[in-house]
Image (cartoon, rainbow, N blue to C red; front, top):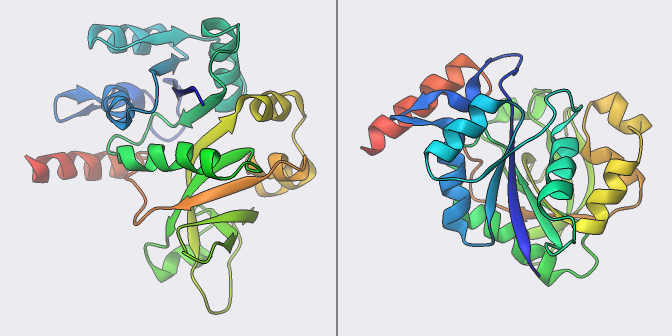
Length: 245
């Protein structure tokens, strides 16, 4: 396999505008994400910027960025547009979509996505789950839950469904971490299809893939990385970097 890591980022976030360039310990958040992707060593890492300010900040830090149309509908659309521009010959057969709001994502999580695609020939898309942070996650619609058919070792499983709804009964509740590793053909098929009925109902893109018959597998991480979506999340990230200093 020949993977590439693409990091979509744009300034117009609803809950935290301008968040890719938010300062965390003296470094723009998107640059921190890029550094973690580079540390994973799975392939080249490129920021897919929806705005020139983001591309300029990444290049100033020595990273690679490609500018895409800011009006593209979703992160997967931006990934496809960037891929068509920087690798039209299709040299990269695996594409890792890493969100630009995970400044401390463990490199091992990215590697686990790629390793899962290598280990499971029937896997079209690899992703990541982590144990629920608290019992409150079960009823929180912002905490997306993954329903898995776990492998015997408990470290990976085939995804049966994703939901914002409350899950009941005994057993682990897996919180979905929005990192995806696509086989290139699966990404193209996904992006060529319109939003599906379940996707529109749950407001979860990954359900389109399941409705298309694509197979999604998930690697189990020990904990979910910090994700910065709100001003409170940003303060948590800043406190985290201060505590590590």
